Structure formats: structure tokens, C-alpha cells
Image 1 (cartoon, rainbow, N blue to C red):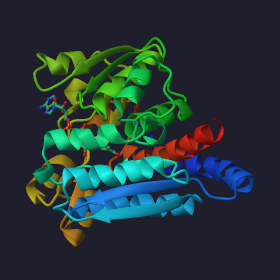
Image 2: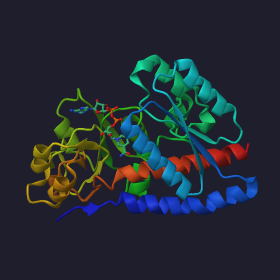
Image 3: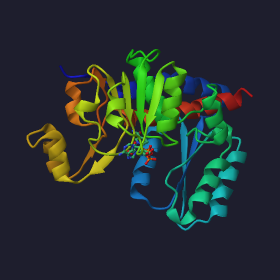
Image 4: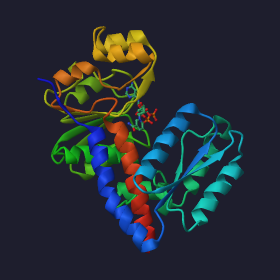
Length: 309
Ligand code: NAD
């Protein structure tokens, strides 16, 4: 039997429609919309697409979204200057610096920029203060992708307490916060990564298996406990026909779409897992739409909590 499809698009739409009355209440009380400022440095084409999607979704939800564009050769001081200006602007509620920053800035400068964002406007939840609060289970602003996964699980009535969960991937933006959020909900959590021994054996123990590594088809059916909930965070755009055939089969619907566009987006989880899992997120249409919905939710939460101070 095929796994239940955990529909991220529908879940994201529900979250956004729940935000609408809160946005209206904010507007009537403060005579302005909650505002999100996105800092986009450089010309990375994928970043431009992501920012456009965030801008569109924010405007649809009634937020004021301002995109601040800066040249790829902007210096550390110029980018920091912009962040400080936004920190000091009382009408700015949320600041998002679109990653990645140009490689020419270097790692240390990139970290400085993210650390400079005021924690109360840090709608990505990456500031060390917010990460610390997340560890202690009392954060307001938390990373959007893992928060979206939790919303999807809870709204789909998937029990978390008492389960064993396995998170594959240990990044600061997905793997680590995902593990903390599951732990806070009383799951027994294991984090796997590129140096984990017997990853397949550990994964097979999971009632909830989350993969966030960006390796197409990495999680195969033999790595999944029958009936488990499988969340595929991975997003890998590909133009590799061979890969798509190997994952979906030559006569699949996915190949029809691929042959029209020449590209598709694939997840970390092999499509064969649909026949083993109890519930599963598709790619696309799973975790992706939730990340943006949670960004909007964080922006509103930041606006409300600053206004209440
Ligand atoms: P990252 O590159 O920062 O981290 C990848 C992690 O995967 C690392 O911790 C690494 O140890 C682990 N890893 C790599 N190869 C592995 C292997 N063979 N076995 C076990 N672990 C391995 O990536 P990230 O930013 O966390 O993103 C991960 C994936 O999630 C990417 O595909 C990214 O596009 C996607 N993503 C999706 C969303 C969304 O909205 N759906 C948001 C963020 C990231």
C-alpha cells in the first residue's frame, strides 16, 4: 500500500490563511503592515528566484516586503552597514539575509553579517541567541524549514512523543534544529551525518525519518521501517535524464514532465520508499512550501512581539 502523502502545499496554504486575520489586527492597531526586509547581495540566479517567491508570498499575506539589493562586490562593511540600518529602523520587523552571500566576502564576514542581525528581527532564527533559546526550548524565532516540518507532522496528526526519530544531516539550518525540535516533543532522536557508521541500520529503527542532505534518492526502501513517517527535506534540481530515469522509471509521469522542461527537482528519498512508509512528503510539494509559510509566520511573530514590548 502506498504511503499517505503529507501535502505541504495545502498545509502552507492553511498556515497562511490563519495569518491573515492576525495581519489585519496588526494593521488596524499599528496603522502599518508588519514588514519584512530581505537583503539580497549579488547575482546568484537561484537566490533571485527564492527571494521573488518570498516577496510574492509575503505580499499575498498582507505583509510589507522590501528587497534591498546590493552588488556582488559589496564589502563586509557595506553589508554590515545595511544590517545595522535595518536593526535601527523602527518600522522594520524582520530581516532576512538571503544565503549564500557572495563567496568573495569569505566565511568570517558572512558569519559576522548573520550575527549582526538583531535577535528580535531574526526571522530565520539563525542568531546565536535564538539558537540558544531553541536549545532551552523557549525560542520565539526558530529556523523556518524544521519549524515547517513540525507544523506538517502535527497538523497531519502524526504522533511525535515516545517515537524514535532519525535526522540525516546536521546543518545549522535544518538538521540540528530539526533534531532539537523533535527532542522537545519527546521523541528519542538520533542525528546521522556523513561520518555515521551503519546509517542504514540506524535509519531502519526510525518511526520518523527526516532526510536533509541534498543527495538524490539516498534513502532507499531497505533503510525504512515499514509504516514509518518519512520527511524529505532534500531539494536537488537536476538536468540529468539518466538519474531521473533511475529514480522514477522511464514510463513515469515524472519523465513526461522532465522531457518537456529538461529539468526536475528531486528529493533525498527514493520513490520506492512510497511503498514502505506509512506517510511521506513529496518533492516538490512537501517541505518546500512550508519554509516560506513559516518565514511569514516568524515575521508576524517578530512584529507582534516588538509591538508588545
Ligand atoms: P548542508 O550542505 O548544509 O548539510 C548537508 C548535511 O548532510 C551535512 O550535515 C552532511 O554531514 C550531511 N551529509 C552529506 N552527505 C551525506 C551522506 N552521504 N550521508 C549522510 N549525511 C550526509 O545542507 P542543508 O542546507 O542542510 O540542506 C540539505 C538539503 O535540504 C539540500 O538539498 C537543500 O537544498 C535542502 N533544503 C531544503 C529546504 C526546503 O525548504 N525544503 C530548506 C533548506 C534546505
